[in-house]
Image (cartoon, rainbow, N blue to C red; front, side):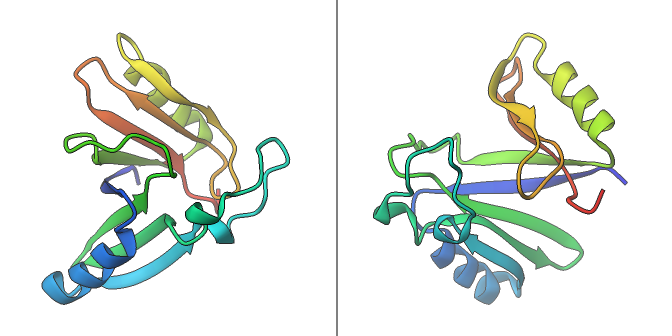
Length: 141
């Protein structure tokens, strides 16, 4: 079943936000992974020390709803207004490709749709209205 999930992008405060939402909203932490815990990518330079403790991905559950959070990578611009995105959890790679192709019409690709270590298809598109969509497929596909 396709789902839309809120995705909050923080500037180094994602761990703090998770603790806050646990207390304020009764959130249950479903997982947190830092940039330092990610597998090394031979196509990129080594991870800078200032990035290692930042959150690469976190998921919390509030009631029946999941919400995802991450920190920006050091040096990535962070402005109020671009820190909330929508993550579309597609059922299949083909469905993810359809969403990706449709949303980029009149918009801008931020990250090409590609396989990652957490998803068989993941990409980021800013649509023609300025809304950022992260398109992903569950890793268990």
